[in-house]
View 1 (cartoon, rainbow, N blue to C red):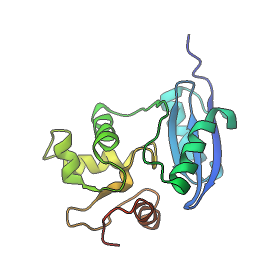
View 2: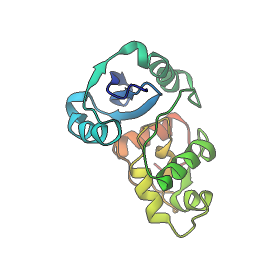
View 3: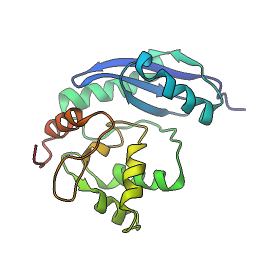
View 4: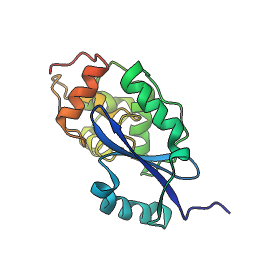
Length: 176
């Protein structure tokens, strides 16, 4: 029987601020902006819902590969991530996240309308925005690459300054 009674975490400093990686036995399940002290309340509700636990064990060896890949992204231009996922969300959210992973490459942007068309739900632009807002893997699932249809920077859980910094890092063509 799979052990779902523990989740592993590590906090790390990045050029855009502190982040926390959460891993299950199956793979990475969250990457959040901020340290555990800042995000612990929302993490407890989430972990209880999906893992029936609120136990988080600091374990740098579990997060080492992803931590290295994030370092490479920020400093050496890594364009994709190669880690196992353990994603939890609705079927619709998972479709949106899959589209972001597969159809929004490094250094490019897409609009919410583009993402709605990608998942073959062209009228679901607002729902796409909601799913993007629930993205559990900041940076790895590149929701920062989604912009307004007029090319403007709109909405980002990490804040607009972080979104701008990520797009500048990737040399994405946006008005900033």
